[in-house]
Length: 301
Image (cartoon, rainbow, N blue to C red):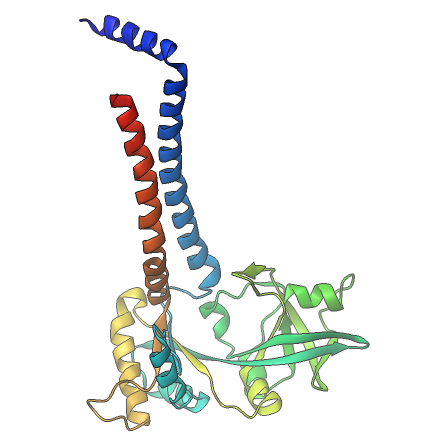
């Protein structure tokens, strides 16, 4: 039988069994569409997490009291650790030979006032002056604070887009003064709008020198230390080992004891995220594969 005759017989069979043909095509279409959709969704989520959630350059390491806790027991043990401090960040900056830059971040939650207007539960992010490049901070208007302002614990602030919308909806906020717990803070910049990420608002925040947060707003000296290697991505391992050695030495950690701090990086976060989505990806592939198998059986019949 020639190819032309085979095509003619196939078309005739399709016309005689319209419902069966429709169901077969529907099964195949659903299966293929599911596979394509799952791959697209997972790839999109991975890109979203990389670009939005992990607001961190890939060649930056973070040393903090907490690492990635994979169980309740690990989290409880992390809570018992001593806080990483700004003093340790300065020690790393002095002693680390493979570090191109060392920065720090402190966090505080407080209300912001301007006249009769009040914005509750604002994230006060205290940074060192060099953190703008490490954290991908995009200042839409104005400027970031300087090392001199950080050194003198100046009351200056880069506000988030939501703070601008609520407090200064129709005016330029640059140069105006807001109050945090009664302390005046002069606005020097406005951060570009980020939006809500995984249900967390990223625009209701104020960025200010870390010294202002620690000396004025809170008695806590806990920080997260950010380190960038001299050799870029290729120097991450060497820098991580050197900083670990410095921190363990500062804390007089015994040789066989575990690190009394956590080490995080963009790659570690992405690996954790991909491991979390791998199960969902496999399940959806299995479901779509069943649809394809059923469609193939119907075709064979």
